[in-house]
Every structure is written in structure tokens, then in C-alpha cells.
Length: 83
Image 1 (cartoon, rainbow, N blue to C red):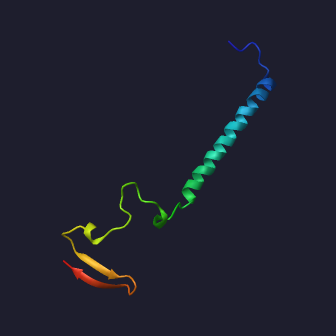
Image 2 (image 1 turned 120 degrees about the horizontal axis):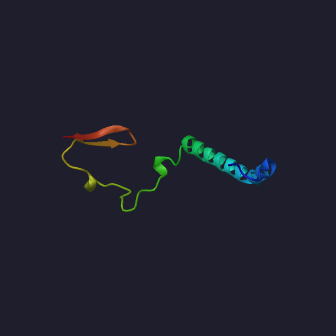
Image 3 (image 1 turned 180 degrees about the vertical axis):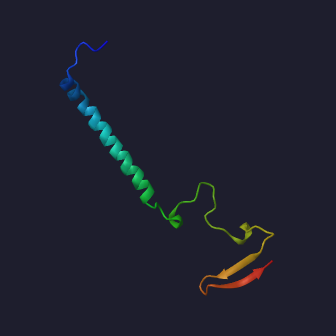
């Protein structure tokens, strides 16, 4: 069976708004997705630490058992290396 009243012009007029809205929505999603892939984000050195995580380490926080290397940052040389 077919629909009793098929006025294609009336149907096209009624569907124009939703089609335009869906098109704008899809364009917006594409722009946001491309922006997420292109934009590098916040540099790692400017990001906040997670809640409860220490923001600075001290010598007491170091893990024992492995090699230890101290570097003089101003001279950029190794000051002390122990096993």
C-alpha cells in the first residue's frame, strides 16, 4: 500500500529544517574532531598534578636499590654516580 497523500513539495518543506540542523551538527563534530587531532594541548610542564600526587620530589622519595646519578644542572655535568 502507498500513502494516501503524497505531496513531495510539502514533505520537502517540512524536512528542510531537520536536515539543515543535522548538517550543521555533523560539520560541528568534524571541526571538533579535527581540532582534537591537530591541537597539541597543554604542554606537559604546565599540566597540574593529579590529586594526592607529589609535585616535587626529595631525596627521601628516591627508590633504593638502583644506580643513583646526580647532575649539576647549571654545568650540565654528572656530579656523582653510585651503584
